[in-house]
Image 1 (cartoon, helix red, strand yellow):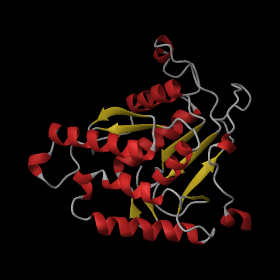
Image 2: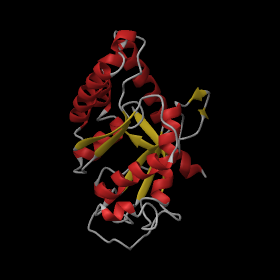
Image 3: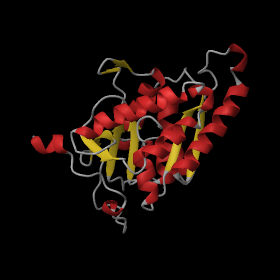
Length: 246
């Protein structure tokens, strides 16, 4: 999240949005230090994630506690994400890009599984009562008020968001993950400034993040759950110059 969308989430939080972060895995295996693997690393990762979320102004972090590195697309995964979707009723839903390779970058298998399941939840399990009716028994009705689905991840995407005012907090949040950043913090911070500067160059921003954004299709049900939320007030993404060319 910190690499792909932290600057944008901080902008939304600053504008008054209630932002909830759902972390699917327990973070227990992603290390080269054999003595750190397991529950010890999990506890460290939970603490780091909470600190990063606080830096960005996020309201809550939800953990699903799937074993780090072992996530597969199963019906259980889809149901668990649907449960979160129905409980928190997002107007904007950011998901990971499930594409296996993106501009020469190999996408993590956990990211691919979670990304695809999340996309499917927005179309079926999160919005349709016949999918996982046991969620109805938990008091979780389908949520049909989704306005926008944002796909985040590596590579250049169509919607460019100016994060010039939140780039420092993006990096600060990333540095909270000491168990992953280690002694490479300065190098990683430089890398983040470099790739976000490239992302913003085409739109005239100092720093930016990019997304693919969907706002229509079978997973959207405009008008079925009216409310007074104006997404334009929540730091809506500026005009994307690349899209305007088409």
